[in-house]
Length: 261
Image (cartoon, rainbow, N blue to C red; front, side, top):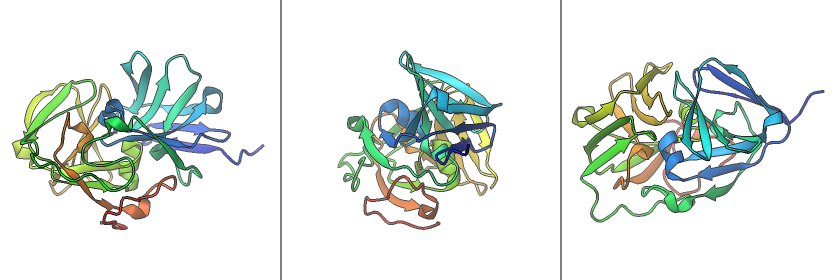
């Protein structure tokens, strides 16, 4: 019998695919430090009981034990943030951005809001930029195997809602432009790169899956705001590719919104 609530999903490169049956829980956005490091902004997930969830292709699926309480599933080839499996529970949290097509879900709850980045608010307009912004930004993945620094502050931060960014981050991305030549690398033993269909390259940690940076085919470079440890000194300033945003959330912070870019 056809299940009207069935869903499919995947990472960006298609190495990991999955399917669910039955009605999914509405979406929760998590602003904890671990989710922000992993996704590059903040993470948003639905949830399904394990008997209603199955991985249909695990060719590039990798797991990282982010804490004694949970492990995180991501694609080892493209770096997409996909799953969060709580220990001792028969359910799987699934990135809403990984779902294919219309979800029919709504974002109904924000959690760990006290850990949100300094450049946005979970709801409403972002805070003002700090009076004394940091002149140095220390960045790292969740596990710490990739670490670098660059001059601060982050300045203008752009949220991107294109399908690629939503598939990779699990929700949507937020990043700031940077001069790649000013980066000081402290560790990059697990740094991986994935070439997108448009010939851009995305940097991520192959051990924990954290999203770190993007380099366009033309050489323009940007850093994921969630990769910054501590204050960014930046402010969310605009949304791009809003015409491709997920159906489960609204853009309600009053910032400029471009359908494309």
